[in-house]
Each structure stands twice: as C-alpha cells, then as structure tokens.
Amino acid sequence: EVQLVESGGGLVQPGGSLRLSCAASGFTFSGYWMSWVRQAPGKGLEWVANIKQDGSEEYYVDSVKGRFTISRDNAKNSLSLQMNSLRAEDTAVYYCARSKSSSWHAPFDPWGQGTPVTVSS
Amino acid sequence: EIVLTQSPGTLYLSPGERATLSCRASQSVSGSYLAWYQQKIGQAPRLLIYGASSRAAGIPDRFSGSGSGTDFTLTISRLEPEDFAVYHCQQYGSSPWTFGQGTKVEIK
Image (cartoon, rainbow over the protein chains, first blue to last red):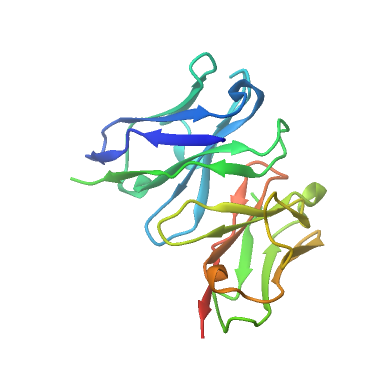
C-alpha cells in the first residue's frame, strides 16, 4: 500500500524555524516528483514546493522562496521541508504529496494525512 | 500564474440529484493538465479526475470531467451521501501549479 506520513508540525513563534518530514512507503520513492502542499485554516489548497526524482531540480511558490527548502533522501525514502523565517501567514496544514506518475506534468496522488503548523506568539 | 476560479462557491443539492461544478482558468491550461480532487472534513484531498477527463483508480463512474482550454467541468451524475464534500480543481500545466478556491457540495 502506498503511504505518506508527515511529521514535525507544531507551534512556532514568528521568525522561527521548523522542519517537516514525510516518510514514504509502498512504492519506489526515487521514481517520482514529490511536493508539499498547504492549506490555511478554512482556505483552499496552495502548492508550496516540489523536487525532482534525483533532487537536481527544486521549485517554489514565490511566497516561500528564500525561506523554505525542500529536500529528499532516496536512500531513506524521506522528503523534508525546512521552513525558516516563519510568518503568521504560513499557518496551515502541510501535506506531502506524490506525483501520480514520473512526469513533471502530473497531478498529486496520493497525499499524506497532513501535519499542522501554527505560527503565533 | 494561472488563476483558477470555481463556481458556485456552494452547491445545495439532494441525494440522487446531478451536480455540475465549474472551473475557469485565467489562461489556457496546456495539455488539458487539469485535475479534480475531493476533500472531506479533516481528511486529505483525494484525486478524482486528471487530464481533464480521466478517472483515477477506484473512482466511481458517476464522476466525470470535461472541458479544455479555459473552461472545465466536474459532473456527479447522481449524488450519493458520501459525495457531499469540497471539490478542488488544480492545473499542473504551467508552474506554479495552482488550485481553485473550492466548491462545497452541501445537502439541501
């Protein structure tokens, strides 16, 4: 069974840092683009970042560029999101998601259950 | 950036009725790279439709997608009780990938 399990969320003060992790199982992790998608309370979904199969390419939404870093460890089937200089508007549930296929142009399938991040003093 | 606008914001329908949800893009979605997701309260989104009209694995055939260019539609032919949820459209043709704001299908 394909499974994605996020961890690392929590309460952090503005300006602080947090590192999210996603443990993948049930598929060949190194064969897929991986992404982080977030959802602020009561709001829609927002793609945050993605990373190529071998980690050689990374892309970010403008609002997190220079503050967030996506990375992966194919040997450990793990995806990470290092979040620095956090702001109140980063408060959201963060989902780890796999691309449906190995292609750059692919929807997200499946998704993890999400980990909540709250940025507040 | 491609902006996706979903309408209506909320759809009030009864079980057995037909639901028609719209997703309009601010510019043409290349390759019809348009997906629909279903999200229930407290759960992660689930892929329903990709490539504008292809059903994902395990999705009942009462769900169908259509459209191209800038106008896309998700149709649920006969609503089942478990279909009352929020539906999101997403384009993955041009980076950054973007989502619509969602349509909530509520029981009338």
